[in-house]
Length: 138
Length: 154
Image (cartoon, rainbow over all chains, first blue to last red; front, top):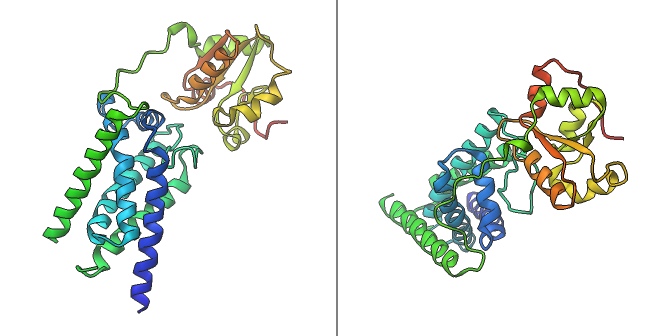
């Protein structure tokens, strides 16, 4: 019972974060593309494609999590996304890049810093939890 | 697990398809291949030597484009904090201090830091033509052993 509630709450919280992050950027890829470029992890040519696709992937993943459909699959995508976000933010800090995160579009515009690392790590943990602990049919 | 991976791939391809479709029809769509970054015109940048000279003579207004907490932790003496991300709020305070024709030196930190370039662009749009960018400013300033100070903006 407790495990079920924990799964449920984790799913909702993680889903809500992904929805929030995706929805803010989904119809306005230009500023997000500029921010992705700022992380300097990808060849410049590929940046826009990521800016076009990533917000939709966040949004659908979040929706599926909240709705409880394909929970483990969404958690798998969530795990990969959070791991990439965590790597992006960490390398930006390590290289001393003075950039905006852009993770939540205009909702959270502060420069990349430890709060982002914390959030991404928490999202990674939550995704992994759902991926490994939710029963196959859930 | 196999089913989970299949579903995850479906999620990935489905989202990609929606993204591409929306981007194609949206008026805010962007090119799929990002055009190369336009190099900053050289005349916009200033060397640390020239910046130091202007600073020593008091001939330029220095603008720190970083966030207030970074500014507080250390900045070029006399520099005003004008965080690019909160431009409107902070610019109001500086409007009376800087003149249209003043030479300004914007800086942030990191070789590829965009904040100072963005700040310079905003100021130029507002009719301040003489804005230079000291690339990787805070780092090169310190590396050159030039004075630094701490504390919040007055």
